[in-house]
Length: 291
Image (cartoon, rainbow, N blue to C red):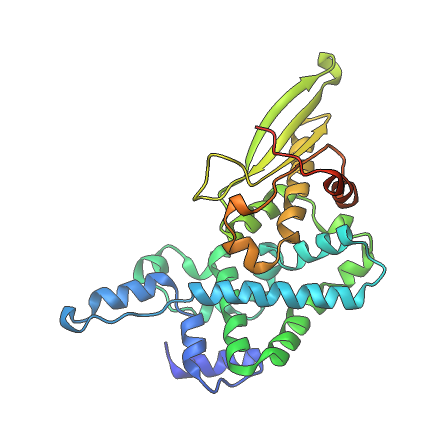
């Protein structure tokens, strides 16, 4: 990667790094790191650091700044509405638009295989790299600069849309896709959708489904189960996914990645129940997830 390229990207970010290593690492994909390691002298084997750990930190910084800013800007929003807006702002789809505006793909250090397969335009790769860049800014420039950058580049461009849908309902149209992105970010396994029952006549059936969240290290028992009913399987899945997403968004960043499943209280949310209903039920008794 040329020094000129880095200077150009720093100009796009509006910041000159005191320690350029933070930015180099944020832009280094694992494919490039492993490639450099394998090509080095075996007697002097190098360990090249990629951007995956920075991605982890950047995700936490982003989540905190977005949560704080929404709390400050929209005091009239209920918790459920704030969660919906936050989910939109940290979603892969929204972050991808920011990464493309910064032309982030042009500055990535990729392995030859990743380069040939079109890695510079891959959505997941760009979103992960953007989160890594946010971490690099936080480590080198400090919290205030990284906070202002997130507000200016990620939050403010979406404020018009948020203001147009102050209920937060219209910001997310596909909860299953958003949940898919979130479980990847929190280290959970892919959600499992299970048809629990079908009721009613053929021409007017009601479908009840569950969205079950598991951790890779404990696939025998769900960490959390959301249940929802709908006139179609698709609608029931979307509602269950919405409830599961709200659960993940309610977890502090460190808990969502590090707390073992057995230390959490799992619960099943009835169809149509929102956060308020769930909290009232939890105050009475903690329900076990339906198997």
